[in-house]
Every structure is written in C-alpha cells, then in structure tokens.
Amino acid sequence: MTDVRVLVVDDQRLIRESIASLLDIQDGITVVGTAGDGQEAVDLAVSLAPDVVLMDVRMPVMDGIEALAVLRERVPCRVVMLTTFDDEDYVVRALRGGASGYLLKDRPARELAAAVRLAHDGIAQFDPAAATRLANALQPPRTPREHSLTEREIEVLRLVAAGRTNREIGRRLHLAEGTVKNHISRVLGRLGLRDRTQAALYARDHGLL
Image (cartoon, rainbow, N blue to C red; front, side, top):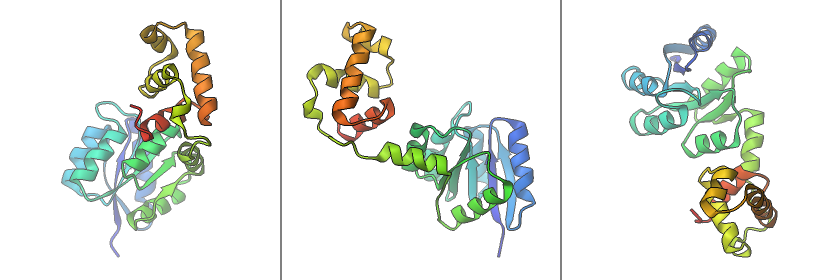
C-alpha cells in the first residue's frame, strides 16, 4: 500500500513545519510539501498532486475556505481544515465547500495521522467542538416563519446577514443603536434563533438576502 501524500498549509512557519515533521514519521503518510497561504497551497497542490491537504482557515493572500473552493475545482484531493478556530461560520462554510473534515490543532499527532488516513478513504472527520458548532448552526429554527416579522425587522435581519454591525445598521436605517439591539432581540426570539450567526444562516436559507 502506498503512503498517503499530504500537503500541510499554515501561515505560521513553526507550526506548519512542526505538523509536517510529526506527520512525516507516522506510518503510511508522506508529507510532500508545505505552504504558507491558500494561493501557495493551490499552486503546490497542482504540481505535487497530494492525496490530502491539511489547510488552516485564517491566512493571508487567500484564506483556507477560498483555497478549498479552488482546490475542489482543480485538484482531485481531500481537504481537511486544521485550525484553532471552531467558529460556527467557518465550520459551516467548510462543510458546504466540500471539506473532508474540520479539526483543531490541539490533537495528538497519531490522531491527526489517523484522521488523514480516514479522509483519504472518504470518511470525514470533525473535532467534537466543531461538530457541536455545526449541529447548533444547522439546527432548524423552532418557528421558521419570516412572515411573523415586521418589515423593519426583516430589514434589520437582512443587514445582520450582510455582516453589518449594530452601529452600521442604525446609520443605514436611521435608528438608534439601542433600537437596533431591540429589533435583533425580537427577531431572534420570534424565529427561535440563538445568535447572529444563526440569523444570518436563516436569512440565507429562506431567501431573504
């Protein structure tokens, strides 16, 4: 059986070299290269043809989510996100982008190697914390009825989904920041949502953008 060929991508040199060194001594794995940003990862993946790419999320030039999308089109490899961030938005975007896993960097080298092998075999691996975030983000709202909102609340929801801050929403709609907060609280309560991330996903999934 040939080794799983791995490309390690992280913008911090010490971290990517450490990960590469630890993986390279694991049975059945060969690290074929390292990259410091998403664009470099794409370029190297095209030339090196790795089986699995371990990809950080936040990086300069091109972040991991963007690089994931490009790799899905250009290189027949599995991409596993490896990061310190278990933010719901990152987890959901990675899953929707076709990632073969979402892992946190604090796991032991043997577990990471096992996750790489499983990803190569087509089995997605999610860190427990990331899996919880994903379950929370994808949980359907208890009362999914956008028509229960007022026109003003729908306007506020759309701007929340667009990533606007309360201050920016207030300026856009000529409302006091406290009034915006009240509107957002009512929107979350009426739709059974937990936070702004779920509100943004709700607006996207229900065609309110």
